[in-house]
Amino acid sequence: MPYTTEEGGRLNNFAVETKPYAAEPPTSKQKIQYIVLGLGALLLVGGMIAVAVAIS
Image (cartoon, rainbow, N blue to C red):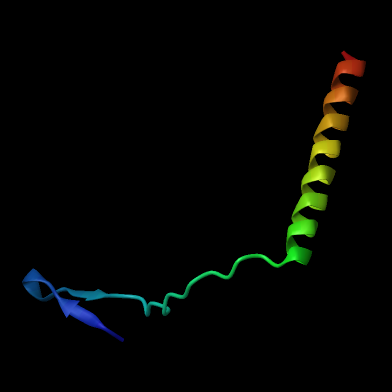
């Protein structure tokens, strides 16, 4: 485990860092899934707002 010694003899431990990597762009199937989930979220929020308006 990597550590350094500070003033007064205190040890400072560091977590092991993972190697960075470049993100891959979404595939066309993933893009369609994002659109479907977004539309579902809009319908859910819109329905909740409609119920709130109808109740009040």
